Image 1 (tube, rainbow, N blue to C red):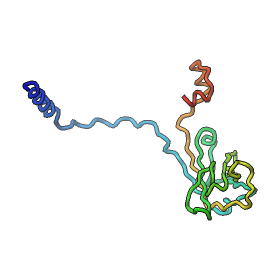
Image 2: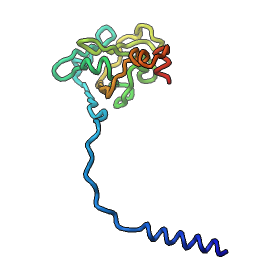
Image 3: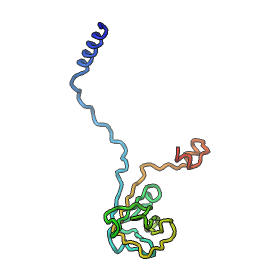
Image 4: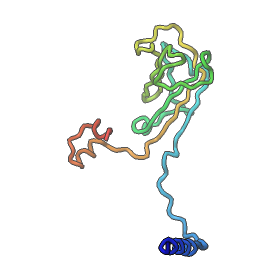
Length: 169
C-alpha cells in the first residue's frame, strides 16, 4: 500500500515538474527539396481536335499542349476521356474500358502527338462502327523527382539481378 502511494506521489510530482511554458522558437530551417509540385493537368475540349479519325484521336502538340521529352521518357502521363452519350460527365481512364465495357482505349506518346486508339474489348481492331464522341480529354503530366538507371545500380552494387527483380524488391 505504501508503495502504491509512493508511486502515485512520484507520478504527480513528475507531472507537475514537466509542466511549464514553452521556450522561444528557434530559427526556421532550410527548405527541403521540392516534391512533385510540378504536376500539370490539361483538359482538352475542342470538338475539332477530339474527332475520331480511323478509330484514333491524334492530339498534335502545339503552343498550348505538349508533353516534354523529360516527362515522356522519365515521368508519368495519365489520360482520361469523357464521352458525350453514355454516362456524360464520367471520366474513363485510358488504357481501359469505355462505358458499359463496349470498347477500350489505349494511348501512345510520340515525338509530336498523343494518339488515343479505339479497340474492341478483347484488344482487336475496332469493329463497332462509328466510335462514341469524346467531349473532353484530360491529360495529367507528372515529372519524376528522381530517375534511377537500373543498369548503373546493378553494376555499382555488384548484383546480377534482372530489372524485374530490382523493381519488385
